[in-house]
Amino acid sequence: MSVAVGHRIYSGQIIVIQTASSTTDPIEVRGRVEYDSGGNAPFAVPITPVADRVPQVAVTIFRPTGIGTITQLNVFSRTARKRGQTLAIVAVQDVSGDAGQDVLCMGYVRDFFNLTLGVYENPGPGGGEGFLSWLAVAADVAPVDIATSLAATNALRKIHGFVWSYNASADAATRTATAKLEQRGPALPTGFATLTSASVWNSGTLTLTLSEEGVIYAMGSGGDGLAVVDDNGTLAIDSTATAPQPFPIWVTEDDITRIEFDVGAPHANDRHNLYILVEEWLVI
Image 1 (cartoon, rainbow, N blue to C red):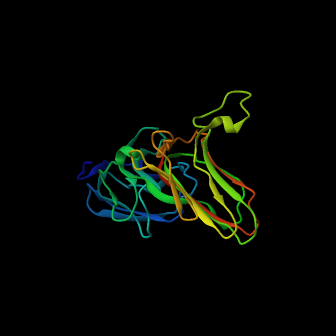
Image 2: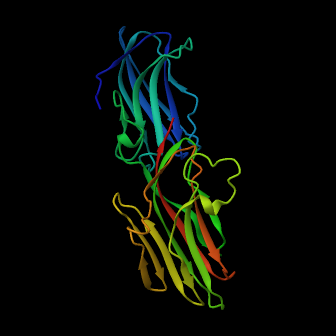
Image 3: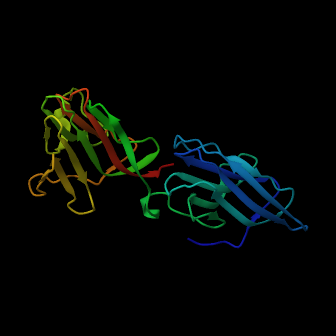
C-alpha cells in the first residue's frame, strides 16, 4: 500500500464510487477538495450497497466547480462489517463518459480499517483474509436429504469444512447419515446422470437408534485436516492414509461443486443442524 498527499481534479471531471457487496449495511464517503482559486469544498455522501455481490453502476459523489486538489478522502462504515463483505472503488472520471479513470482508493470497507486516499488493496486472497462465516444449511429442523451448492455469484470461496449434528428422537428407528462431496469442477459431461459416480469423497456413516445423538465433522487446517464421526459418544476418525478428507477446497463462481447430506430412515421427530464454514472474497 502507498499513501498519496493529494490528487488533482479539473472541471469536467467527477468523483465516483462503485461497490460490490454481500450486505446492505450503509457506508459513507467523506472528502475535501481544495481549489487553486482559494477555498475548499467538503463532501459527505451516504451509500447503501446492494447485497447481491454484483458490481453496481458508479455513483457520482462530487462535481468540482474549478481546478483543485483532492486532499482528503475516507470511506468508512458505522456498522459492524468484516473484510470480504463490501468492496469499494473511488475514482476520478471524465464527465464525457470516457472509460478511463484514475482510481483514488480501492479495497474492503470494514471494522478498524477505513479506505483513504491512495490506499489500494488486493480484493482477492492475496490481499488478506476473507469474510469467514458459518453458512446455515439446516438449523434445528426435521432431517431430510439436502444437496447444497457451494458456489456464489461474483465470489471466490474457500470451504473450510462442515459440522452436522443429529439428534434422534425416542421413536424406534435406525437412522443413518453420510455426507458426500460431489461434482467438483465447472461441469459434467453429457449423459453423466448418476451423481453417486460424481462423488470425490464420502464421510464415515453415522448410525443412530432411538434417543441417540451424533456428529459428523470434517475440517481442513491447511494440512491433513480431520474427519470424525461421533456415534453417540464413540469417536471414529477417518485415516488420512485411506480416506483423506479434502478440505479446505476452493470454489469459483462457475463451480457446480456441492455437498450432499444423505439421511436414511429418519423419523419426523428427529432434529438436525448443518453448518458449513465458508470464507468469501468478492470477484469483480
